Image 1 (cartoon, one colour):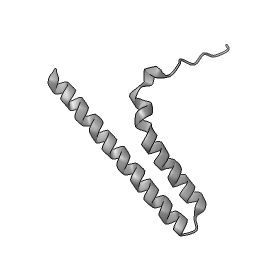
Image 2: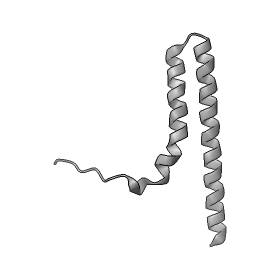
Image 3: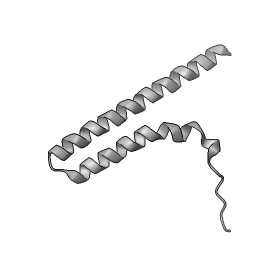
Length: 72
């Protein structure tokens, strides 16, 4: 059982590192796009960086979100 917990922790750490890398790369690309005068592309890369930096916290606790109810 402890092997499964260890493997789970390693996978979570790897995912965190990958998301951090993606966020950093998106910020670098945003800066390059802005330096080239491509402000819309820079904005999109910044949004991608934000998404990569926050996705892990959103996926970590899915039970914290309220269940949506429909009107029908």
